[in-house]
Image (cartoon, rainbow, N blue to C red):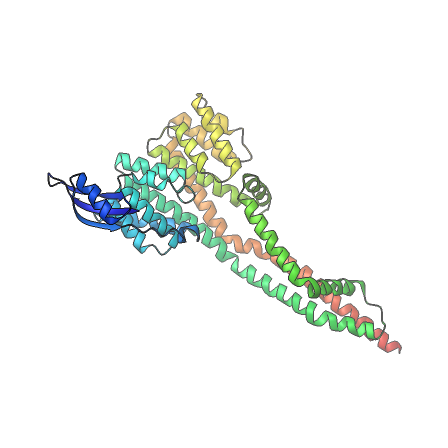
Length: 401
């Protein structure tokens, strides 16, 4: 069990930290053997269960960075800043993680090393930048850059989600209309044909078959869809699954180019941050590569890192991956290496991609709407034919009687 303590040694120097012991009494005895007069001791209770659940978003990480800037500028110590955040953060998973980080910082561990224990939340690029800030005394600037980065990521995500609300609502209404026709209208029409022994038109017969499947096997279909989504979700977490998902989405006309630009922006942004922090080019590339969740970009950047260690230039090596890095990025890096202005030209390219993604995410709804309209138009035409043709056939049959 861990206990947080404060006290003074024989020389009157203030002491604080975390000690592990079976009980509070044993912790006090251990500290007394170390000539520490204990003035405060309290057990540290870490909420382990909530940390297993929930999701930490870009918004949560941006809030973490912005709050750290505020606390550090207000004169809070690092451990006080982390402790305050761990009490105020609404996200239970992040709160539990920050409690553990606080304990490590209080025990004397640098913040960067404490964060490295949670690579799924704080990627290697982020922790390395924080380490640079600790060494150089520019921790506030590092958190400012990271806060801007996560704010942009959250803004892109929010714009994409908001722009898809209208198409999603329209599509749901369309699906609901189809289900009403399948389950309410089509069966009545087919019954009229069967009772009067009139041949059912082929298109109506097709929808009748679909209605029969939905009525008799609807529950099984829903369960199968849920199971399939669960399998796909787990598969997408594997290396093979990540490659398959990327190959699928990158070939979609609207989504594909945006997906590439997101990874390119992340590469340029983190690479520029690390270079500004004084990290050598090969090490910077290695850190950025390790932080990439896309296997294609990860392996490519790590390969470029290994080649730069052998003395090759980035621009010469990056040309081996034209499907991942467009000519603009290759030319930009080449110019930066030749002029010795790689850091500044990366910042300019970063701003270009930020503006591109801002414009594309703002107009994604306008791009998606025509696709939704075409799908709905085709569906409505088929539905109208399935209703009008039997009515015409029924009218004709009654007229012949």
